[in-house]
Length: 115
Length: 116
Image 1: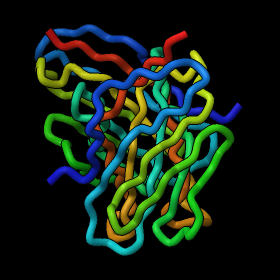
Image 2: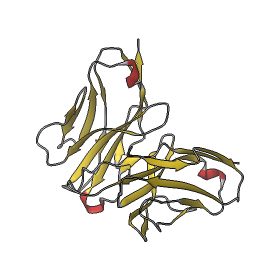
Image 3: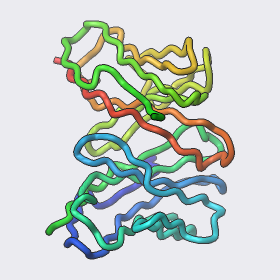
Image 4: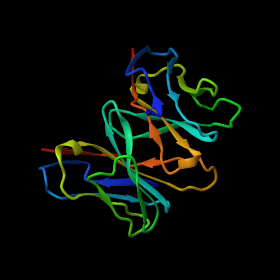
């Protein structure tokens, strides 16, 4: 069964606007961690933000914030004030406590920022 | 500079010709892993290693081998590559200290492999 679902293969956003990238996950574990990575066209994986399942507040890192809705099992990434350099592939990932050697990734969302 | 390096970055080979993709990290990390990335599937774990001489299968280990003889190196071996192993491969390492779940993985730059 798919652990991480990213339903938006591609997204467009106007420069300087905010954009939300969706991520839903499936786990029966109470303890888990959620991650977002950025992959620009150059191919490297860049860690953006982390949210633990027991964290009460939504994680924020600069222009990135994670809208964590535990009951709905969603962990959407919000990018504020989009920049042209934000154009990239974005991956949501999860690590579960019962198998914390593995990180499960979604299929990714390609974000294009328009000038 | 802390980094994970992979070599080669690009490789085109033929079916059946054994190849090795090297991975090295300079951060003294215990944990290393290999992923493959395919369109529409994201990244999937091939193998991982929790320390020297300790390796285990991930989700898609068929057709791959690994070894961990030294802490810094974790090569990926394709004994008899096939076209369905054409993919983008990432090595990653991390130090599993502190937060048991939130530890960050550091990824290498990727190796794009084409098997014809």
